[in-house]
Image (tube, rainbow, N blue to C red; front, side, top):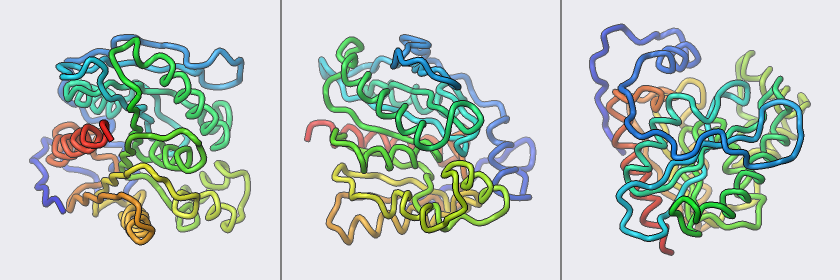
Length: 287
């Protein structure tokens, strides 16, 4: 467990709930990240479709000791409604991973009201993964590919990994929902109905990462104990289930972290959690 103390802010953090806090830290200015993408608005699919275009940003690994460095397919969050490959936390994460010698392919996927629900988003993740496996070497990256997702992107990552025949070197789950059937609250329930196209909670459960096929790749889960949007129990239960199955799993909990802490690079949890993530990815890249 990491005991992280929150730095003093110039404005008080909202205490009216998880959504208000997440929106506040997303809007809060953050120090400029020095690394820019090596390639921008790259198409990962030529398929014609409605909604969000199949685009990605690519970051070359910096200071890599290997001719072909490990890399990560990075999926943004946003409750399946908002978010994109260039949003603030994604730029921050991508830059830090690249500085650690890890290549990054950050992708857009279709969202509610902008091309489809979870099935369409999973199609996009699969296409982006196939694309990155084909072109990674062009950007100094080898065949050892991992995935990292934030919030809704992490949920998509876990669902994709449980269904695909492709193997990933490792997965990093950052405050992702693992049990849709446990979702409560009017707004969250409404989004789940739209995501799944049904009110049936048993179907939501069947489509949840916790109840999907076991993932053979090692998984690191990062979660804040003060998360009011996706309670910490999602990661705890997912981790414990993997341990009981004999699957490689690590869990890091941050005592004072809310949902979306990576939206704010100045939070005490942000840098340590990315150091932990990079170390996990690098440790598993040669196995």
